[in-house]
Image (cartoon, rainbow, N blue to C red; front, side, top):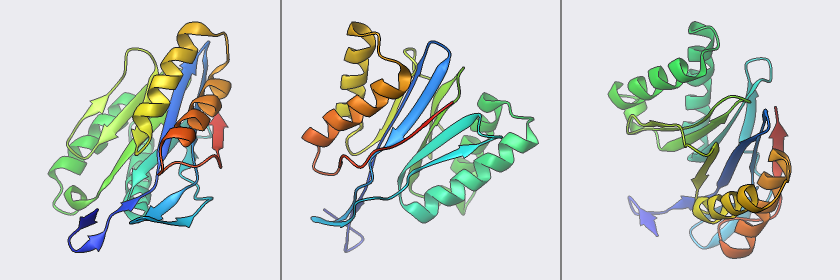
Length: 182
């Protein structure tokens, strides 16, 4: 697919799960440009707030890093209150002339909360504690929901197995998994 006359960059499956007081967030490592894989080991997740929050991104890398930096600033401004920082970032993202042009989504997990933050002003807290963004997100989400319902796997194992299932289905997802647990 093309966007603005250039091949569309597709890059990501990010999945986060909260289970039994633990949170895990992982991503694959594949980045593609058009129909070509250009990198197999892209790191799309980052720890914030003294490693108590893990974030992941889907979309343009420079845009995502800009948003992660802004999110970290919001966390500091609001004393680590995850929801408040997320809402303030989403508000700024939607209303700021510069930020509004950024093309990315964020997935955020802590042991208590799982959120998706989008540039449309949405802050979504799924009822089941599972967040998924990116090209293979719906495959990973379906796998994670099934594993949550039918197994006793911990959060990290659910994320890992779900991403591997997504990698078997989605051409924009690979099996070079990076995973963080809090």
